[in-house]
Image: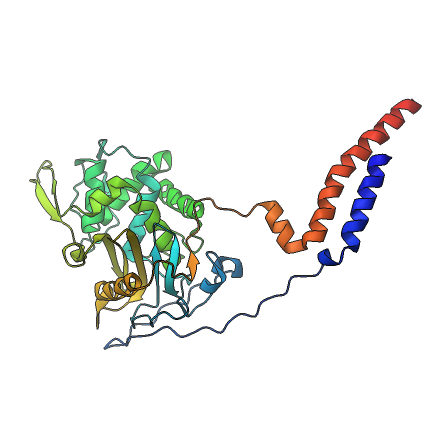
Length: 385
């Protein structure tokens, strides 16, 4: 009975205390979207289907300021450059700070920047020295005019050679082989499933892969914020950075095909100071897309952009402008952050936030008191038998 009295007294004190009254949290008014600075292309882009809406909770991942279809930049910061990209983000991969963005969580079509998700999912799983054989089905559904590294059916290539072909030449053929091998018994679809599992682990909530290469597929989307999460995962790997900074690689000879060289199509490597690597993409639906990372004075900034046009600057020119803007900001500038892999709010924190401190304390006390009362009751019942 003493414990019950303590619980009752404690509950009464909590419920009567003026500082812990159970009041629904005030809902902050959403700030109106601020239009992103836009550069007009010489010709209007073709119409594209409207992507599905983004859930309210997903729009707030990384901070409330990122829950906008418009511009998010630090207070007092210089205006961001005008670009044609329909969404973009600049983030510090070391600190996790998001320096600014335009529609950071809006769904967009990825094109070949999707290949970074393939690398994030499968590079930790595949032995680079392992040699695999290319199957005819790996190449059967690829347009010869699309981006290819030049694999031949029946050819045998190391996983490392395939990664180089994927990242230097954006090889859709390499993407299909890597996805099939990484997918195990489930084949290529298994590799795509691994990509989507990795997106969930990274909390890239707007990202859904349908093809391993980024070639258009129904329901395939990503976001500028998600791409920054994926870039942080890939550029944290030494082998990935080494591949991305390789200028020229040799693809070994195969029956009926001599050895040949592939060169890195990321022209910013020798054009932008501190460039660690980048990945371009293009389809008529996605337009130009880009992910790039540069490092200066201990700051490693990523730029991601989607839906850009080839003029007046093109995706590479727009990436340069956004990186220059980001490096000019002070190191503590921020409008949000990149969440970490598997990061979740604890149930206790969510309870305290959603129900109020008083209610949470009451529920906690009841949680401890109820089992005690049940044990007492059982002992009493046992005494009656």
